[in-house]
Image (cartoon, rainbow, N blue to C red):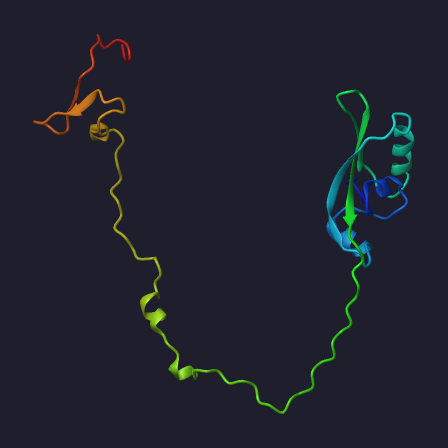
Length: 179
């Protein structure tokens, strides 16, 4: 069974367990009447340690189930996390305005007749950015020319006589990296 949260103005009202409960926002809006549902709120309350079992029992006695959790703060005092549908102030129903009578004035005509519409955008932007481009050749990762640029540390440079060859300027026996 899924959780059902009470509809209330404050967390203390939600703990009373006497109000309506809803699982979804749509259910909450349908049950709230003329009060708007603002959000699903979680408030933290610090009751006296002796009151906690009675508050939990009273809260779970109503329609709402699973909306209250009991935690302890750093000092070991109980803290209640109360999740509920927060209701706003009642909305006054607005009186419907009388429909205006049909006036004898004709409706405003468009400034430009349809024959004189400008189609410049259609000519220039008809294709958008969908022009076909030439396909790039597939790069074979086994080719050695992938590594023709110098390394990040600057130890390599291109050979002036053969641009596909890299010359290294670091010393070492070649058995260790960077050694």
